[in-house]
Length: 272
Ligand code: NDP
Image 1 (tube, helix red, strand yellow):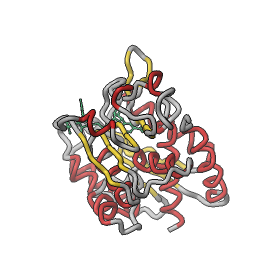
Image 2 (cartoon, rainbow, N blue to C red):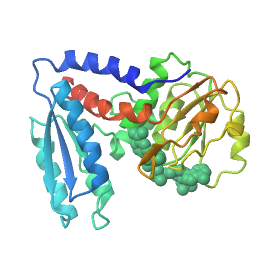
Image 3 (cartoon, rainbow, N blue to C red):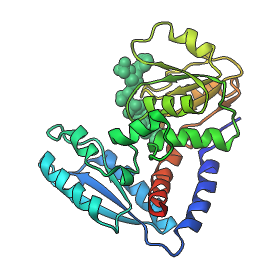
Image 4 (cartoon, rainbow, N blue to C red):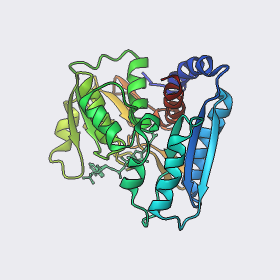
């Protein structure tokens, strides 16, 4: 079975349109300097927000902005009642203290779920913080296709703070038994072969091959790799599609859902 991101997103957007109707909801996006990869992501968010009737407040700063100046801008957005969500486009220039800047976002407006408070709430499973959008896209896909997570043996490959670790926490909270693997993991194939679900988020084109999974596996590909202008996932999709139980494509899988969930979190922030 192909786990189609377009179908997952359709239902979420239909519900969002109803929630937005008649309300003025605004997401602030803070962008530092010019960055072509962020420009295309922001373009995608703006296109979706226009369809849904959500306002975008673009806050652009100079490449040479200081950490203090950025925190000042974010504080202004924190106290601005017309702003419901704040997102900072990554990566920030190396001269900026990324941790300090992210943590200056009021967690009630942290719709990207990146602050230490949001992450702490996720790990503690308090239920009142925002989940980061890519991990949330994985959860929404699993839920849309009625895949029973409780009791599953899940292997997550990748342990970054924005993807691998939050995915592992979300699925642990849902009752899965999660093994988190990374570049120092021994006998990776041994682990993936025995898993009911394999989630790959490492950034290596076609890393997960047919011999690494079993026939009953659900495979979720978070990877985005652009090679010679073409988009590839971390999973060797063409060779796994006829072997495994279910699989997400790239493009058309997890990446398709992410920006809609950023806007969903913004609407949820407004409704709260
Ligand atoms: P990072 O570079 O921050 O983390 C990569 C992780 O993969 C690290 O934990 C690293 O291990 C691990 N890793 C790297 N090589 C191997 C290997 N050979 N074997 C096992 N583990 C390995 O990446 P991100 O988490 O930010 O992103 C991961 C992927 O997801 C990328 O392709 C990115 O483009 C994509 N992405 C997709 C999004 C979407 O919306 N679909 C959103 C965000 C990211 P170690 O920690 O030991 O170095």
